[in-house]
Length: 183
Length: 101
Image (tube, rainbow over all chains, first blue to last red; front, side, top):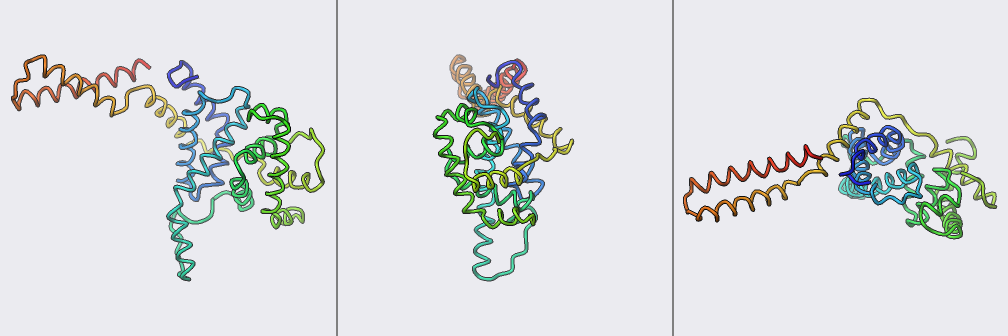
């Protein structure tokens, strides 16, 4: 399906209605203000329009959209907040009190735990990241995940195992809080 | 997540933790949803017509053909007239492609 095809616009609009909440949730995990949420959602839908014609038909739409939204979110955050983060680090280094600028603070507006998990998942190598997103967040089976990312089931299992190990290392404190019911 | 393989208790716990923390989608406010729908419609229209650079190329080519075919008289007034005409022509071509898409 291409942007020139009849029905492409209707398909995309239907996707924004069905998966809007998913894209909105992912955007809130990355963005630091409501205005940025909207900017990031626009970026995600622009990317969807671009890459939908090349989507693997075996890949379920929900999982594919979550992967796409997180990829866009990661790139967008790196570009959008590069200067702000650099400035924050420099000011902190010189012990200068920095007044948070509207819309460019250091935290996302989504929940703190979600933000930390998102950052940890973003730090994984691409294959492990995609497997974690599809297997854990999307609840897909090993077979479905293997078809979606065009890899063998053995690769999916191994990537999940390595990804979980890395995430456990990075998020051990948060996992402890969760286990104690303090999250 | 479907349990289609054997996993260690640590892995099971981490999976439960990650699933719970990241569970649930937040609804999109209706005004934001309406803006997103307008945005995607605009984006698709943009992709089904000429970009401004391509429109400029159409105008330039038309201008060259017109100028050369009329003997290339070096008159500023004539050049200006041709310039305006071919600019309008480029925009018109762009609009027609947009309408046809």
